[in-house]
Image (cartoon, rainbow, N blue to C red; front, side, top):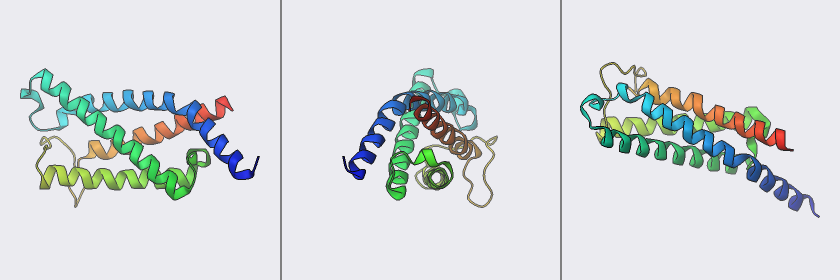
Length: 157
């Protein structure tokens, strides 16, 4: 077996073992975060529960798609699908890409397209006005997700 073939095989095994648990955890974390941050968004108190459930589901789906997209881009940039094994470089790229996307997406959706708005209680980042909740969401959940991937991979090797 060539070195390249061996590396691809190990990468596939790594993802096959660790990814299902990590996806389930990401889903739970994102779902609870979306529900928990509702009071920071405008109009949530007067919105019927079925519509709030839809918003939470759509937000969670968007968060998971963002997480997956940033993971793929980071894996391509690092040229390693299991970049999370080598903590610092891949994790930094992953976090910075996700933060950049989150800040840009929140800005466009809140201030340009007006798809949603912040309640007056939402703390915002200076200069750009992006809400602190979505910013913190990216700083906390994805690194926890990478840590779980790494832990599951190391445990099953």
